Length: 326
Image 1: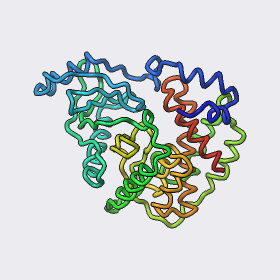
Image 2: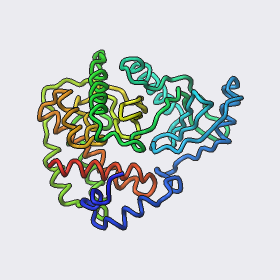
Image 3: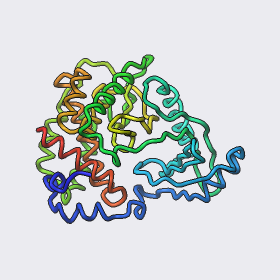
């Protein structure tokens, strides 16, 4: 969690909002419209019916800061993930299969543990969508053990990024969805973020920053493989070192600068420079990484202010780092 002074420097009514974020029960407010509800009892019934070999394993709900899935432990070695937003059944199945393929592609390509897909479940027991089971990775997420001043962690993160970039994209290129292409294609979303952030952030200043960041050219670098979402909740830490990477289903080709969001979401200034030196980033690539982090942080601050305080505070902290660097 950022210090009070970090948050206040970007907030119009810093103390009121910060207290609100710190005290709000993240589980009391849905993160998405029409969000699906998943209970331990539902998971128990689904597992028992579809995977009877795991009937003896305990089911435990995980208090996750994730925004896409509800997560439950199945015994000590497995995790069940249930999409929170309603979608078409077949489209969800295809999405989960694509995530599993991405996880298999990354598995073993770095020395850092990543989840291994185990099974796909089907709708049932009151839950309307397919769901997935993967291996459980032990560790503490970076929101709970802050690695921001660990040089060793910065070296580890740079190594992970380089190993991911080294994966052969096999002719694939960025698919045009989400972050990883043209910064200017996010203008409409950024306008939405600015409009919703008037009471939370110094919007005029941030508008000026985006006006400059959006003009950064892509340059001549080809798409490389990226993790795509190196935020604290997807990073496991142990003793100041990188212990594992979660949410790997977004692995795919994109702007090589995309994974540099981790520099701003996870690291303080000295360690950001360590990561940059390790990666050998030029000025344009480094600036585009900052731009992708800016875009992601702007959305996190307002969208999750009620429903996921940790994500909102991550956005505040990242924006504070970016504006301090300015």
